[in-house]
Image 1 (cartoon, rainbow, N blue to C red):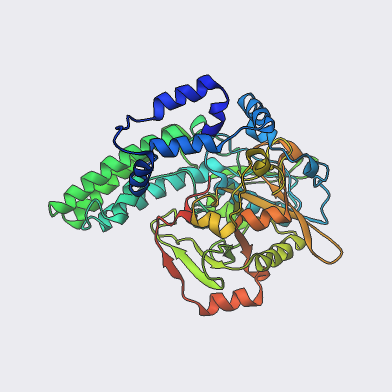
Image 2: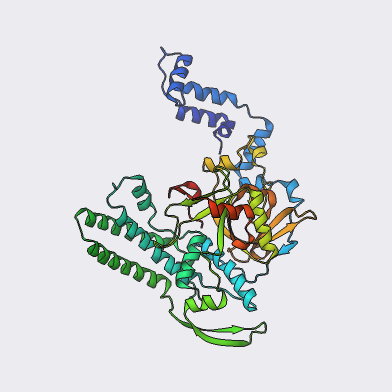
Length: 483
């Protein structure tokens, strides 16, 4: 609540003054005190008085105060005119998929999105009426691999001071349940996939915070021990043996929370009528190769729209990976028009895409609509919110926060997109579990897109072939794990 609104009553103003005004010696004039405190950067008694006098509440101000005091700001800021022109569920081009997933109280949107993209391909390629893949299976290995990544990196950086920028970041981020597409590709390539019924969700997979926090606590303790071993001159073999014992403890914690991942399983493919068509025994890797078979590591490219950095460059983020022996997140930075061209080509070819955005901005959750005109906060507050996309990124006001599956676009007669259809992983809410984003909203809040290389434009292919990635630090604010 703006402090100026608290001065609507005499009692409120008196209480505010009594609480905030310091004792001022009679020998110092208000103008002298103002000059001194302004130089110091603090709010002086004189300045506070000036602020009080600057606000003369009108009848409209009082009405707004009364309204905000008793209502949710978002409800009061709803742009009623914009609601009369709400986008609908009619789309000129749409990828077929079936079965909305639900990540519940977990930060695994990146994993749900990656598997949603994959299952759509598997269903289409194998004429499967429905398919859900196990997020829990890959999440087990994600947490194990991230634990190893942390422990081995602690050993690698043990010679650096504990308070170095890198080690400070490392011990603040030993583990998370968030991630991005590179992790999906590395994990599936290494461990394969299994159907959801083969390794179902548990309470700890659906609500990850307690388990992940406990594992993170243990990893920090283990990291300190490994640093001490290095400082004491421990041999490489001793460090490897101790790290293996630490990972065994992490494996136990994961197993009793998530279950033990299967090494093989029996699965029956069924037709549209639910009749059994084929029953076989698979390993997770065999299942992936049989029903998908594509190369997630080599067949896809990551695209970014980051207006704070030069376009037509490749960037790599240090330590932004899920496995020690995996790949860092590497992307081509392009203007939005170029990104949309590739997205449209993919959707026209019935291929869903992994993408991520700042989903919490201008989001009508009840209607499932993302539109820059959903809420008029400026009129409600009497101020102007004027930052553009680059300025919001630079100041930390906006960043990629959630991954979803891009499955549809509505093009006009000239091929210009008006709105986009997104498959979410929050269960069957509005629009059957889908979100509708206007094209203007995508311009402002879309950040990352993963597309098959065959949909890449000629200029993007040229950049990939000729440019050397620019390495960015692990703590770059644009690259926090998506949840």
